[in-house]
Amino acid sequence: MYALSAESLEKRFRKGKGKLIWALRKVSFSVARGEIYGILGPNGSGKSTLVRILATLLIPDGGRAWVLGYDVVRQPKQVRALIHRVSTEAAFFKKLSPLENLLYGARLYGLSGRVVGRRARGLLAELGIPPDRQRRPMEQLSRGQQQKVAVARALLQPPPVLLLDEPTTGLDPRSKREVQELVLGLRREKGTTILLTTHDMEEADRICDRVGILDEGRLVAEGAPWKLKQRVKTDGRPVSMEDVFFALTGKEWEDES
Image (cartoon, rainbow, N blue to C red):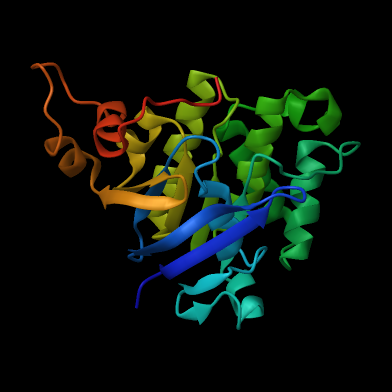
């Protein structure tokens, strides 16, 4: 049984009173247990829509998806008990500190006690948030620091499946590396299955076992980064994931910058 799988997923949105816009078109893939699977694509390619369907936040217009064998539409309660999701729109109590937000989240998961407090402080420190900032109100932290708190909250009680929707967007290079190392450690120590969406080519190349490339809602290719690179010929220089994207889609890479 796969940790994650999808079969011919489709999703459309209506733009105002105009035509329907395809977000996903017949997307099928599967992710093995303990695998880090990246969904790579520019903004608007359908990455976040896919994550929201897997997280039971959107209902697909066609196809089916499963988390550890549970159907995301027919068995949403069981699915939600198995996943955590981190997105760029993470919500917090802005008047509370990072530590207070984490401890509140721990209570929602039925956790309590000094062990959780130590775990929360350790995670925040590991992500580069020093003790003095752990007790400041969230509204006084930068967007990048708030994003780190969102990652820490999801890892406070490591789930079987972790959905990371562009978790390092807006982070500086050092902070990105800190989050990536934490993700790799979680898979190594807990065997967590991780689906990561990103528009960061280097990030996908570095930490993903396999990647799927989305372009205008279509999954145009998937495989290990090194295998995808073998499909591309250059003038002798090293092949990048950007070269892969261009070769498979005929488009220049454009990210949010």
